Structures are given as C-alpha cells and as structure tokens.
Length: 148
Image 1 (cartoon, rainbow, N blue to C red):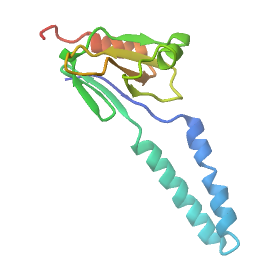
Image 2 (image 1 turned 180 degrees about the vertical axis):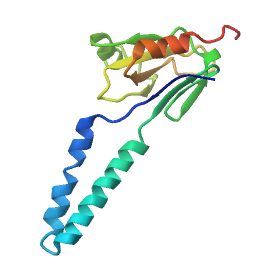
Image 3 (image 1 turned 90 degrees about the vertical axis):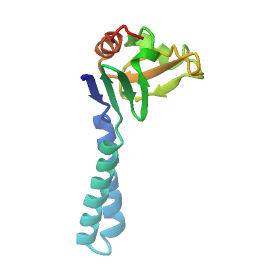
C-alpha cells in the first residue's frame, strides 16, 4: 500500500532557462526559412521540456519498500530516518556528508532526509534524498511495521 509519493519536478527556472533554445534555433534557421525556424524552436523546446519531465525522479514509500529514483530498499533494512531543512539540510548535503552515502539530490529543493542503512552487508551507510517535505517523508519511512 502506498504511504507517500513525491515527484521531484525541476524548478521553474530550469524550464525558463531551457527556453533559450527558442531564440537560438530562430537565430540559426530564420535566415533560411522563418517557418522552419519556428518549427525547430517548438520541437526543440518541447523535447527539452519532455526530457526534464520524464527524467524527474520519484520518491515513493510503501508499507514494505522505499524507492528513490531507480534505487529501492526494503524498509526492514533502514534505521530511524531524520528530515532536515534550511542550514541543517545544507550541512547534510555538504560538510556532514559521508563519501560512501547514496545520493538523490536536486539543487532546487531545500529539504533532505537522511535514511540510515542497517544492512550489515551494504557498504552504504545512509541515503540522502532531496524532498520538498522532509518531515512528512521521514514520518512515512519511520512508520514502518516493526516486524524485521
């Protein structure tokens, strides 16, 4: 059963910055043909937008698993998760970061959750996952069934 779900959409600024492909393609193709330039601009911007949307990762918590992007782990293998925001989240992404940790970071998102891995066979000490709602995601992970 699904407990939490969040799509880590790109920020509005990323969509606006990729819109620079429109004047660039017009500049290249308008001297040849204005119709070709406009069509190329529309197709390229549509492709950039589609790429941004389709590659945005999904964070999902069910009653048994945590999925962050392409990685999945059983909730029985994770410890007590903590959510961070503001300067604490900045530190978790930087100075407090372990080089062996697994990361799903998005620069446009302020919050992160730190998910400790308690599997003795896994060399990864913890996961760091960007989120817009760190406290809600941490609560969803921590409310797992206690049967290990």
